[in-house]
Image (cartoon, rainbow, N blue to C red; front, side, top):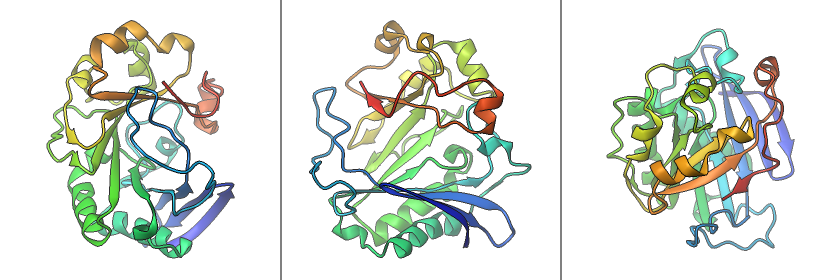
Length: 260
């Protein structure tokens, strides 16, 4: 892998990496020391907010599981790439090692070290490589917590989501028709099916809502389908790009990252 381009921001860096066959992947290196998960009465991390920008507090690496993506979410530029392919476990692990080398920091020295499988691609369309990468990373860095993000591919096996592996579900709307428009991939679980997911993770399953309109949030359906004992809700903004702008999605209804 080599750096194709990078963009630095206050608490991290986004890398665009070129693979040997010329395909591109995106990797992030972020350190986020904020309390984010106590709104439901259960603190899921215990961090010092005064240590802004410290990898020793909360360090997160976001990796890709594909180059490109066949899901084509209406607010994501990744699906605009001309072609896509699954990454190998070596390429997934390589992104983590690349970010660690660039940072010059040992994950063992972080109070919380997270890897988010949330950049390019749908992890459950490449799940064997993802599971192999998780096992190899955990063997080398035992304190790693893995967050695997999915739209909910039909027929998925969630039995490996246990201990320090946590599931994040990309929901984005409680309206079935709107969700099908936002996430046009046909072989995905229904909202009702997603609500029946149970894991053995140390943390609750996160429901991620990138809200385009206020009508996409429905408190009654949230209570109906997603038991608070098993699910945690995260509201996220749209990061504007050429695809979201083409679909007239603007910035969505959330400013910053909000947890409810």
